[in-house]
Image (cartoon, rainbow, N blue to C red):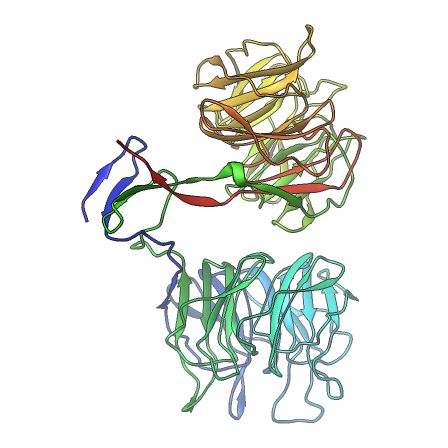
Length: 603
């Protein structure tokens, strides 16, 4: 294959067939120290996994091991040896082990024991309400779930127990009872469970209140390993015949993927998504034994070739030049998860995939300190900002870090707060206090644009830079501190509602093609200069317009007309979230548009 570089810097490839998206592979990881099965597991990725307890006939274990992506390390043991236990936790320093079985003796064997891991030792936590084994876990040390399980007279329980770090309380029941599922993962307010002995293919999602049945596994079974989130998970292993079988969950359906090389079940596992996971330990019934293998799931490996926006290639079999591009005009809106706290005119920032890891910040009417995080399906309340406000400006890159530029109208606040992943800290103020502007960029390189002037943030201080050509407020803004676009807004002059659009090159603003429908209080998403959408707005607009770098095109309207937040709502014009109206609301809508392979006509 010969490669050249196009003007975007991506490869032009001369191939005999169209490239395909890579689906991932399993590879060998470091072997476990103590081979066993039916233990408890926790962790968040293939680089941060824990396994505790378990058995090899006839011995129960208290051993705890931690995996760092390369090797397993023995750490301090559980207080008591047991098998058939479950666990949850979100780091190598924070986990919960609960329930279990003292197989094969004494009687009664089932346990209600709960132990908490602090990174060094296990200590006793509050016991389960009843002795239970073969449960499933999800969540964190202070917000966890014990799902289903088995009691002496009640196999395949439907119960869900919620743990706050101190007490267990009843949550919503499963629709189908489960014990030792193929996979359980996620958060207390956004969990996923699939499979069960029997053999079951049922999959259910939990929103913090109730379980909903969704699409089934392709291969029914139980006792697998894996992990991920409510909308993105990987599982492998099965007490059924296909014990090396693996499946990937994308939030809607399961897809069969490449199988592991190890044929076992009763596994431990963890993962961060359907592109990152690890399974380990377990039991192989034929021939009988306890493998020491660890297998890691990666998508894609460093050697894989994937399609990227702007890639072009020549298909010699069809004599066509093709390119990979966004097909945003064919996108559509659908209902998203509801906010926990109704409000309007809040600030928002989002992660790289647009409609996940998105914050609702310092929202809005009446003045609020609430902050919520979106995982693609549900909102979770996280740490409040220090200063209440409405009409604030925000920018950031999702759940890892974000910056809020608190504004307010009234008063015109200059306060700035920075998010470190767990709490908010006040940092240097804006030079000019205000609200109803747009926040653009990241935690260390951002802009506030509109309602007076433009200011640039370098991670520690604000500097006034070039103003917009048209004075306005309630405008939307998208992009970065060096490449941005602003659309719409309210002006002091007549007509008060603007259709003006300006682009930023890092030093100055330039007027460009106007949006088709003048409006204010819009939202925006995407990457200037050629892949942006502008959403909704006042007066009472449902319009969505797509920008291709030179023209605006009307695409799919939202279900509900009205103003949306004047902030950067996503990093992609192909996946974003719009929410809130001029009056307080919990309603959201999600926009999605697929990638497409396009044939390029040349002469």
